[in-house]
Image (cartoon, rainbow, N blue to C red):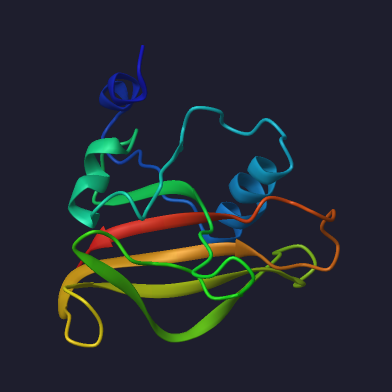
Length: 157
């Protein structure tokens, strides 16, 4: 039985609605360290090969918000900037990054960046109603050489 079928058997009101801390500590951390955590709930998506309106079709759970794992794509091989372009547009960061803290220790365990999708090419793109929250691990206690994976929450405003 697939997740969509399982989801359809749940009583009204049951939804996948994780907190920022759960996304970072339970899902993202366990994914990059190869621990088993709700395997099959979330899929890996190449965000640069998909337009935002295609994301609901690849999500395993039906909702108004979609959750994915994605690898970080560097704009330049030796640089630190992230490539967020797609075929028809680009994701542009808005505001400053927000800290995600452990509920137990209050230590910073990750960061959340908010991005908005623009159609066209910078700087002349047109703002759309698509929004993405990009979560990344950010802790000095992490094992070295973890894959640069992000957890992504996408939705339409």
